[in-house]
Amino acid sequence: MLMRSVLVVLLLLAATVCCVPTSAPSSNHSASYEESTLRILDVATQRMRTIWNMSKSIFLQLTSKGKSPLGGQAPSKHEVEMETYRLVYELAANLSVVPVEQLRDPVLRRRVQRLAKLQLQGLRPEAYEQAKDLLRDMQNYISGSLVCTSDDCSARRPLAMYPQIYQRNMRSKRYEELKLNWYSWRSAINEKNHAKNTFIDYVRLLRIAATYNGHVTPSRTWYLNYDTENFQAEMEEVIWEIMPLYREMHAFLRHSAILAYPKANFKDDGAISAPVMDQMLSQAWYPHQIFQTPYPKDQLPSVHNRLEQVLVTPVKINKKAAEFFESLGLNHMSDNFYERYSRRMNDDEGSADCKSQVYYFPPDVALRYCPKLDYKKMMQIHGIMAELQYNIYKRELPFGLDTEPCPGFGAALGETAVLASGTPRHLHKLKILINDSLTEPQLLNRLFRMGVHTLLAVPQYFINDKFLVDVMDGRIGVQDYNCAFWRLQDKYAGVQPPIWRSAKDFDVDYKFYRGMQPDKSNTRKFISEILGFQFYRSFCLASGQYKPGNPSYPLHNCDFHDSKEAGTLLRDMMKLGATKHWRDIMQIGTGERKLSGRGILEYFAPLFTWLKERNMQLDIEPGWDADDLCRKE
Ligand SMILES: *[C@@H]1O[C@H](CO)[C@@H](O)[C@H](O)[C@H]1NC(C)=O
Ligand SMILES: *[C@@H]1O[C@H](CO)[C@@H](O)[C@H](O)[C@H]1NC(C)=O
Ligand SMILES: *[C@@H]1O[C@H](CO)[C@@H](O)[C@H](O)[C@H]1NC(C)=O
Ligand SMILES: *[C@@H]1O[C@H](CO)[C@@H](O)[C@H](O)[C@H]1NC(C)=O
Image (cartoon, rainbow, N blue to C red; front, side):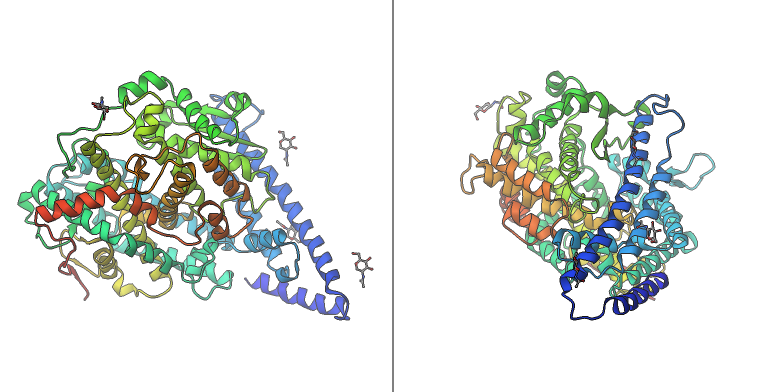
């Protein structure tokens, strides 16, 4: 900070000394500012190219079975990350002295504005290292073997929250076990206040990063590229917009939970116990779930066998997904891409969380794909292909604007293809389903599971995000962290701790810690879901595959495959990268400039109707008036 302000002063001095008389045409200042700024950016771009080269050699090394294709050892991911940090840190300092308002070229102005402000990467090297250490600690809460769920830990290796405890909870039929696991993980990581103090230290660093940007309110830096005064309020509006639907879903699930765990004595008017909520969310697509689906006897058609027969290999799935985008008129994935830049992950990497990875090293983009062959992976790969397409368009843009306009925007574009590819209509096109629509009961079962997957998750992303930001901005004091967290759970989600808690505990869940990484933030997840449904609705309308009021073309069965109209919207947004404000870009695709819950509400409309009727029949009152189970002292 000091260094940068000194530079600013020097430059201002230099400007006044060298460039008087001020009556000279200001266009000359602009020209010379533009020139020197471009020089800085050109040098930076060169450095970025060497970093891309490093990524490329990592990709090649990882996919060449140990042989080093370029000779020598490929750099490590850590080196790439540190080089990137050094580059963006120096560059931000150099650009922070550029008088942005003097630049006439709007694209250049935007490049400078975006590259001059950073989040964690704006921290000085020691502080940045410290932030990385804290993130590693928090990551270890999730995947470290830390938890003894029985009294005797010596007999058995401790378990990790993810995936071990997560999977146990998913399969469990005993509330006592869920409760014990819930409690054990929290006491293990917060022994001697460890988790809470780690969080406090991390927030301190986030605040410092914000002061470097000149932001008085630290959340402005957390929400940097959303570039909106009080962005939180806009997200909250969406939460209230979808709340009527959430409450019906919540009421129905609470009823299921009471039936599933009769011995737990849940109150019928209350919130849902946190471990049960977590369990239900994890069971969205699990066949032995504890909740009831609307029509338990009407199984969804099994697509697994047909999928294997039709798509045969992961490569074939990839090509199908690529073809989805080609059908929209987007880029054709060349043979060169498949031969050189599309590689299968090693089998030992394909564990619980086998996620395909996209690499960006312009002029090339690359893919390491998960070799699993199932319905879920088939849908996911459509999101991955969207990311590849996005990279192919973005690489034409100058460095600094060759990214999404705000975090989650790209994932939201990908979400549209994920949604479309999973519809009965699309599966019918692929000859995986005989019919292009489901029976009414099957359709409601499918929407219900989609609802568990989406509607339960969205308020949790919001709560996690709000808690972090309210702490960061000082709206929640240290003494009140835990009870404030439970008040948010109560207000926005109807979720309650399973036992009495106090201000000494620190009960955030593992997804909260995961979201501390700026590139996996809960904000990003929230945006990708909400915007994703908004984009989907818009592409579906454009393609004529969604016709409001026409029962043959409901939003939830819309497949915009083959639609050049939808493709044009998608491409026009992708091509812009970050050259414009995300609202301007979203307007191109949707005609809207704000986040809205409309996509979600229209998608789930038949489920909403069904839930309202069913809850009425069962005499279930939606909503909650739960006891406060967190003591402040
Ligand atoms: C303004 O800049 C142009 C070239 O960019 C130069 O030819 C001209 O002499 C400059 N005028 C003044 C007043 O500095
Ligand atoms: C990147 O690698 C290519 C080929 O390996 C090489 O020709 C090029 O000069 C490298 N670029 C930079 C900026 O290091
Ligand atoms: C920043 O400016 C310094 C001093 O002019 C220069 O040495 C360095 O290469 C620049 N770095 C970047 C990334 O612009
Ligand atoms: C396909 O749909 C038709 C008409 O709705 C129905 O009669 C038939 O049973 C369905 N077939 C299957 C396999 O679901």
